[in-house]
Length: 75
Ligand code: SF4
Ligand code: SF4
Image (cartoon, rainbow, N blue to C red):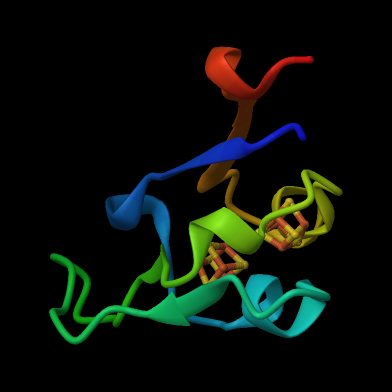
């Protein structure tokens, strides 16, 4: 089964939660820490559930999320 890695860019994030709401698998949460802009940035809280649909990255207005296919699960 394929698995995916999520890379967040927390300093680009404005904490709008669009990505969190777009995710069908509840993979995304908001960090307790704040970034330099004072927002709680998005982060992965359940990465193993990610199906790689890219809805989160597509939804993000700030290009703060990247999704990669993990090589070890590529079969
Ligand atoms: S790629 Fe899809 S399943 Fe994975 S975190 Fe983004 S919206 Fe959720
Ligand atoms: S959609 Fe982008 S800017 Fe909004 S919370 Fe998610 S990562 Fe941050």
